[in-house]
Image 1 (spheres, rainbow, N blue to C red):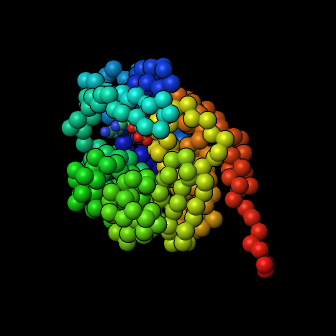
Image 2: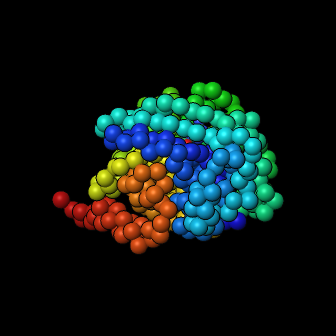
Image 3: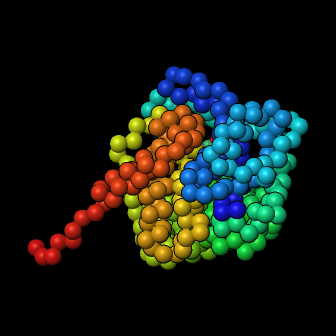
Length: 305
Ligand code: AMP
């Protein structure tokens, strides 16, 4: 298996722009998997209930997701309901229903243990450690987290971060993890805790990363029209890790291209409701958005003044 993702597979209800979209395919592993599947096979590790619609299974399979690691248990699927503010910049969670996700212990199928890349989405860091203990010597381990675990399980999370090659954070999480208001300083402090590369997502403002090659940065795509930002972070991670898997991710050029691909995929995702923007062949569109990013950032250094 090229890429393995461990995280939530969910039924999302999203209230946005005056409409209510009920029981959509969601969850961090779904967004990640549909993004990473653009570049090769992806195995999803998670759990759903016996109410999980067959149409969602079909969609994931049709896009190239391997579901041997997706357990189906008697009970209800994890559900999450959110409501966005009118400007779509903030949201509040109306309902989180754990269902069969409560008490779940991830199990990596044998064939997944030699993956080219492993993504640990923002689940309980104790469970992230359970997965790490099962994985073989995976050459690229990427970790995501969220404020809830930063506050709730800091010691466990610190062990997971130390084991990661690539840590993905947003600006608020980086500040909360390190106590540093300066984003570059926060990134440097996080890198000192173990990961070879730290990637900071700044929503519409792009991405800032520090790795063996030094600093890399990209803006967001200004033409993006946000219809539904749900899952943008996981989609970004899927584009990044999906592209990096099997490549020499320590090479600057490779990582820079992966950041562009991830930015392009995240913009495609937020332009549609739920996973609809990802669940199609967007390779031409991804390439054209990467070209736009390159045009936006290429310039000549002045020889003299
Ligand atoms: P994002 O917009 O990047 O925060 O991702 C939203 C996705 O995360 C939705 O599809 C939800 O189903 C999923 N999600 C929300 N809360 C949780 C949680 N506590 N644990 C795991 N997944 C969650």
